[in-house]
Structures are given as C-alpha cells and as structure tokens.
Image 1 (cartoon, one colour):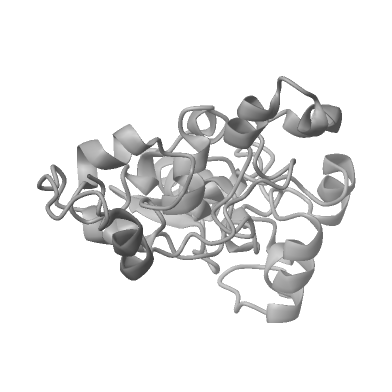
Image 2 (cartoon, one colour):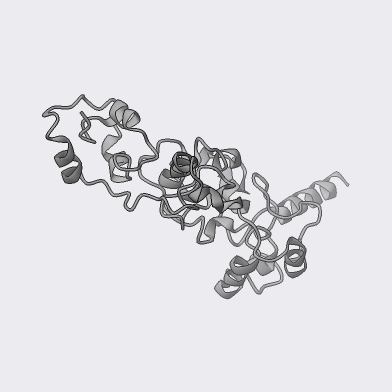
Amino acid sequence: MLFLFSFLLVFFSANAAISGDLNCTTYKGTSFVYTPAAVACSNLISDAACEVLYVDPDTTAGYPSAGTDAERPLACYTTATATPAAVVQDMKTAALDTCPKTCGLCCQTDAYNCANVAYPRLDCSTITTAQCNSIIWRSIIATDCPSACGFCNEGGCVDAVVDCATDISICTTVGMQDFVNTYCQRTCGRCPSSTTYSSTTTASSSSSTCTSYNADSSSHCADWAANGFCTNTFYTSAQRKSYCASTCKIC
C-alpha cells in the first residue's frame, strides 16, 4: 500500500511539472518554474475567453504563475493531447496572439522579447513590477533592461509617470513644461531625437570652455555613453559630470 501511494504521488507530481515548451522558465533546484516575465503581460482577449480556449490541464496546480511549475495548457504549444509533446509553431503563434499570459509565454511577445544592454545599471533579472511602474526606475529600465518590463517597442523612451496619457492636455499647459519634459516624454513627444552618443559632437561643444576633464567615477561610462547616458536629457548635467565627466566631455 505504501509503495502504491508513493508511486501515485510521484506520478501526479511528475504530471504537474512543466514539459514540452520550457520557454519563459528557469531551473530551480529540482524542477523548471516560470519566470516573472512569463506572466508579466496581459491577454489580448478576456481572461475568461482564454480559459475556455486553453483549458487548465491540472485544476489543482492552476494556470502558469511566477515561481510555479504548473503545466501549460497543451493547446498553448502543441496539437497533441498528452505529454511529452512536440512544439507546433502554429499553435504557439496563436497563443501568443491571443492569450500569452494564460499560456505563460509573455516573455516571447514582441514587447518582452529583446536584448538588454551588456552592462545595465541594475540587475535586469531582479526587476519587480513595482520598479516597472516606479517614477525613479522606469526610464532607466527602458534604456537598460527593456525586456524586463515590456518596453522592447518603446525605443528607450517611456513616461516616467505611468498615467501621463490620462490627461494629454498637460503637454501644452503653461507651467507644466518642465514636468512633462522630464516625466511625460513619450506621451508628450519629448523623447530625445537620438540616444546614440557622439563623442565628436559633445567634445566640440565643450572644447571652447575647457581642455581637460575630471576622471570618470564609474567603470561603465563607455557602455552607458553608447546607450545615451551623455545625451539623454533624463539625466541632469550634474549626474553626468559626477559619474562620467571625462567620457561625456563635461567641464
């Protein structure tokens, strides 16, 4: 009896594990679990409709969620009716176009599927939802870790304040221009025209006032400059000078 119970326990545990498509997962100790990016997006149709289209294969484990190993609905990635099952790209494309969150495939949608910079100013893998919505972090994340918050299609420019678009009249309101230039760049069309660093342009604009510069205080200035640190107006001149005076050619 004990042997039978142990066998059934192993069977059901194995049955609940993620199998087939391991995208948007990470190996944690003894099994694959979903990453936060697996369920960071929203479904493109209602959640209720997604649950009809993609039936939960194990009602005890539920649908995919960060840190769990619940099996995806098979229809999210295959035409098979049991695992192991080969990935059928047409099925997966349909899931990505309709119910990526229900299927735990958000990390493969266009908004989340891009490369982060080589030397980000924060650990991209530890970014939380709160940081994605933070006035302090949003602009930095959009530049350095766009895949963490679904900023892949934003060109490195997002509103630092999440509800700027609620009232776009602020874009032309007298007395609000300093605010929107800093915090509502995307909604108000104030994104820098280019985030590419040009040492020639920067140097020529500064050469008339000084011939030497303070040493950089950060070892990552060259990488930051390549990502627009020296020219992006989100950062103040004082911040640029404090970290990368030499690289940015700031007197």
